[in-house]
Length: 393
Image 1 (cartoon, rainbow, N blue to C red):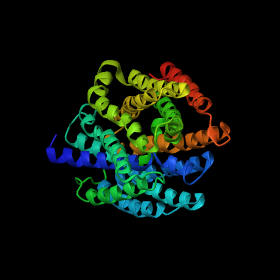
Image 2 (cartoon, rainbow, N blue to C red; image 1 turned 180 degrees about the vertical axis):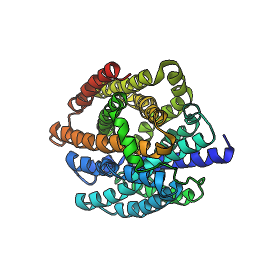
Image 3 (cartoon, one colour; image 1 turned 30 degrees about the vertical axis):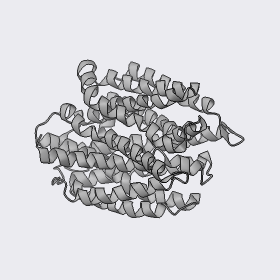
Image 4 (cartoon, rainbow, N blue to C red; image 1 turned 45 degrees about the horizontal axis):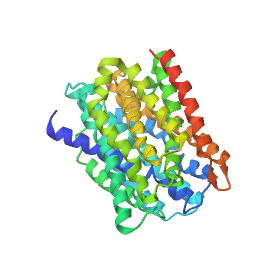
């Protein structure tokens, strides 16, 4: 791969997930702690991204496949998102923060599938196998998430900050500015000759039973992931892990994810194929919830973050590669957008509402009953793995 192209695509992947990783894992601790929001309110704040992903990826995918250069959409969306994230820092009530975060997520959701489609499009143009070469670019997603987690922890240790949790929003805003400016220097990626309504062509793939099963199971596991994002930060603190150590502890997942992306993903795909790689990835999430159900010791809770990293590589990233492998090159942005709309949109939205409901149901005297809470996603994950084994070919 050409060095200039590799650096450009790697920058886009790195910054996209650095922005996401700055606020997603730790914002819940600010909402549940200093702002005293309920589990349901926290769920609705986290639902802003899934709500935006219900339709914004489809809009941006349609635009990128037919009307506007991909890099231009990325630049404008991230710069607008930076402004909104700076505004979000000052919001302390549920209603105002919900509105601002929803507007921000409309911008961010538009960019999520386009970073993937940008990469897959240029790999295809250069006749490079995505299953082999994409790992060197996907690698930067967990690296950025981990570095941001450790950086935020270092910041909190150095300046004794983090109790209010505002710093994660400031960081996301600054990174969005860098990403937005950088996108103006991305490789030229004009719309492909997609014909009429490329998003409808992508949706037509849902008539294929195998692809439909893949989408449904992916939606379920993305929904269950909200138990991880909504619960882990507060769960760790309740188990005795200091708040300033939480970002670094959760970043263990991304360290393992980076290693697995380079050393494990292609190996399993080549030897076992997509089905069993997806099954193995889903099983790691089940193992994570089993550790959470046990609730101790603290070192095992921290180490179990590796399971999330392995699951993300072997289920989420492999799923994106699988979707690309069964799509036509002229609708690659729309297919990636459909996948993001179904998983990060429908899956995460329903999962957010469900997780928030379960967390409130098992909250007594302002304390979460974590064992009962995590038994729910554990049971659903087990059943979903069986469905994947039996029905996905």
